[in-house]
Structures are given as C-alpha cells and as structure tokens.
Image (cartoon, rainbow, N blue to C red):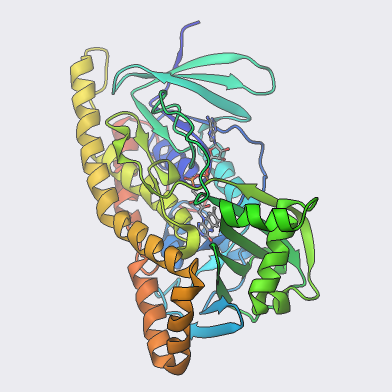
Length: 437
Ligand SMILES: Cc1cc2nc3c(=O)[nH]c(=O)nc-3n(C[C@H](O)[C@H](O)[C@H](O)COP(=O)(O)OP(=O)(O)OC[C@H]3O[C@@H](n4cnc5c(N)ncnc54)[C@H](O)[C@@H]3O)c2cc1C
C-alpha cells in the first residue's frame, strides 16, 4: 500500500509530542501523531509544572483550562531527610502574571494537550504504535500499527519527530541493545493519596539512602508522592519484606526514613495502586544524529529531583518548531533528496545547539543535586548547616530554582506564534489563531 504523506509525523503524545503537533498544525502543516496508550492514563511523574511554562499554555489556547484544573500555587520548598525538615520561600518566576508553579496529574494534563491537538486538525492514531523508521533525512517512512485492529499503515514525511519519552530508542537506533540491569539503576515510583496533611503551597523534596523524591498537592486536593530508588536498595528492601509488592516496601521505607512523610500521610488513603517505571537514563541523547528530530525525554533527560522534565519536554518542542517554521523548507515535486537532507541537517544543527545551551546546565545541576540527596552521609551535615543559617537556605533555594531554569522560559511563544501565522498564510490556508478556540 502506498504510504500516506504528511508534512510531519510525531511519535508519542506526552507533553513534548502534543505540543509540537499543535504548533505545526496551527502553522498549516499536515500532522499525524501516534500514541500507544489510551488516555486518560496515569504516569510515573511528580506532576509539578514550573511557572515558566504557563505562557506556553496561554499561547496554546490552554491557559484558562490549566488554571482551572491545577493544584495550589507552590510558594515554598521543604527539604525532608530523616528527622530533618527545612522550609524556604521560593522566588517568583520572571513572568509577573505567572509567578508560581502548580501541579496537575498527567491523566488530566496529557489528555488536555492531546484534545487540543485533535481540535486544531492533527490526525491522531491512538492506540497506535510506531514500529520502524527508515529512509534518508528529509524523506522518512514510519511503519505504524493500530493496536486495536492490528492493521499496519505506512506514513511518509519529510519531518519525523520522536517524542516517545525515555528508554530504548529502537526507532532512532535500531541496533540499540538492552543493557544488563545494574545495582545503580534508578527505578521510579508514584502513588496518589487523598487526605494528606501538607501545608498549602508547600513542595517537599525528599532525600534518603539510595534515592530521592517529592510530594505535592495537585488537582482536587490529591497528593502525588513520586520517588526514584536505586535497584540495589530496592532489592535489599524486598529481601527484608518477602511477599510484599515493590510499591508497598517503597511506601513503608519512605515513612520510616523521612519522619515528615509519615506525618503527612498518617491519615491519608492511597488512591489507586503504586505505579513503577524505569530504569531512568538521565543524560543528553545527542548521539542519535541528524534524522529524525528528538524532543522531550527522547532528546535528553534530567534527574527528576528538580522537576523540570515536563518543562524541557514542552520547551524543546517550541524550540524545534521555531527552527522548523523559520527555515525555508524546500517543498514541491522538484526538491531533490540532497536539498531535503541539507535542510534537515541545518535545522537539526541549530536546534541541537539551542537544546544544549538551554538544557545541559539543568541536566548537570539535577545530577549533582540527585547524587547529594541519595547520600545522607554527605547531605546530612549540609542540612545541619542550613538549619543553623536559614538565610543560607533561602539563598540556596533561590539559586537552585534559578539555575534549574524554573524562572525563565527557554522558548519565545510570541515569536513562534508569528512564525506559525506567517507559515499558515504562505500556504494560502486560513491562519488559525494561537489563542483560545
Ligand atoms: C519519578 C519521576 C518524577 C517526575 N517528576 C516530575 C515533575 O514533578 N515535574 C516535571 O516537569 N517532570 C517530572 N518528571 C519528568 C517527566 O515525567 C518527563 O520528563 C516527561 O514526561 C517527558 O515528557 P515527554 O513528552 O518527553 O515523554 P512522555 O511523557 O514519556 O511521553 C511519551 C509518550 O510516547 C508514547 N510512546 C512511547 N513509545 C511509543 C511508540 N513506539 N509508538 C507510539 N507511542 C509511543 C508513550 O506511551 C507516552 O505517552 C518526573 C519523572 C519521574 C520518573
């Protein structure tokens, strides 16, 4: 069967994939987005969204819906480790309209973004899976399978964007082999609780031997507890509690190792099962080369201790779309493969340079912070010092927030909005406004 042609094919409808799909469709591109899971679905994530993204929600036409759904404004951070509990004010973001981060469960966030993609004309294949990718840069083919019917379909597009999250990149790197499990691998867990006792607007970050985590109140007062734990620590905990599920031993350990977690969850009821994922693979995946484009965790992943993964997902989608829409993409029947390949390589080079500039410092900061939090022998004396000098704690909280990119957005929503409107009018199609529908 002849493959269906699109201007862009996107794999994965997390925050990265849906954002890119909305932006390109609004610019008049024909876009297919394939997602293997049925939404709404829960996902292992701490659910905190930095204020630096709220202007992006506004520009996607989702600002009001996000504001109506999300949990309270997060104005203070706490460090919880052992018996210690330190609290500091967070600095406001630079956008005076959106000074504080908020939390929203992934079941609501991802569904909201994907609905908007559908509304602006993206063709969504869900549940569908991308099986293979072939073809040169500028003329790629994706083989997709409808999970419900089993039917396969070929798609051909000059631009293929991988937004399928972390894990093995079989599509971009078919030779990649699963590496053996290591004791230092980080496994991720998440559970929701009703009735948690957590001060309004407080965002606790947890440190414990072999791991770290966070607790936050998201929509409808539901608290999200998410953490990462080394595989060897989890194995030891499970050996000590035979017959118990991994989630149950993680919950018991968090309550034992962090006194404040036990207090906050004393009368709380777990809402749904523990979810697990991993191992995580923090780092930049730049080695994946010229084709296809990668955004979100598919491009690179920060240790989740700084809660910046969704920011990097959405903002990398904006950065890539800015380059795709700015560059004069050669179109028409007379475009040679060499021209298409040169265009792709040029966009890729500029996008990757932007990615490294904005996000590599976050990856490094997150790694340093994560390794400290996982080693109470190192972080314990530091916490004691911060407890004695609260001014140092307030200064440190401000610096970490600033360095992790939470205060400023890497993308310029106004510029992309203009480029999209220009591109749409060049195509002689009615330009769809990047505002509330
Ligand atoms: C414990 C933990 C806590 C975290 N806490 C936070 C936090 O508080 N704040 C924050 O900003 N970030 C946090 N993160 C990070 C955040 O979850 C990720 O960075 C974010 O989900 C990345 O978004 P994405 O769109 O790149 O990928 P994803 O959200 O992973 O979406 C990828 C999508 O692609 C689909 N897919 C995969 N393969 C295929 C295929 N072959 N075909 C079709 N579809 C496919 C998947 O089903 C999925 O829906 C946390 C992560 C962890 C592990």
